[in-house]
Image 1 (spheres, rainbow, N blue to C red):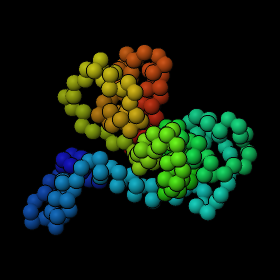
Image 2 (image 1 turned 180 degrees about the horizontal axis):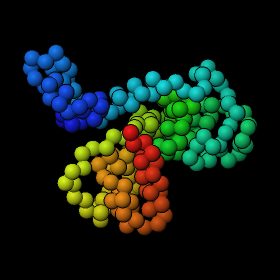
Image 3 (image 1 turned 45 degrees about the horizontal axis):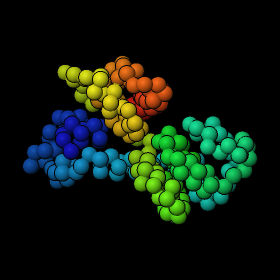
Image 4 (image 1 turned 90 degrees about the horizontal axis):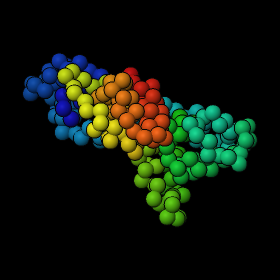
Length: 214
């Protein structure tokens, strides 16, 4: 990671990181370790720690819950009604079979990342459909509800036409990354260049990302 990436990740002033980089600093070994670490790897570890620190709403021993469809971004439990008692593992299996980051984030808050991973690993190897989405499902769980920190945008020139192409078909994780680098008005302008209904989906993901800015 660069010094700026370390500063943003740990929420520490850049001049402190500069002090760490000096060979006589007590934090020099930590600085060396962090500077050799890949940013994606660091973000994964950081998000996993956040999920560990935040206890899920339901105890890991719970087997069923009374369904509240407002928990999720989309309703995939068409045959079940609000207030109906339903198996937790069934909820996880259904939503992770069609993984969408906002629904995955809700599952993590409700039941915890470890439980979701267990359900995926135990149930997503029996047919071609589940095998094909397993990697995406696990990636979304590992990413989780990751807060977004705004990066330095000074003198940044954006080609909205090229940006619109990057937005097309982009995952929530990818859009989160773009939002951290590009201003709201610019990224929405790029989204408007994409044909409907894809543009609507992109704008929705952008708004969700903006809501995670810290």
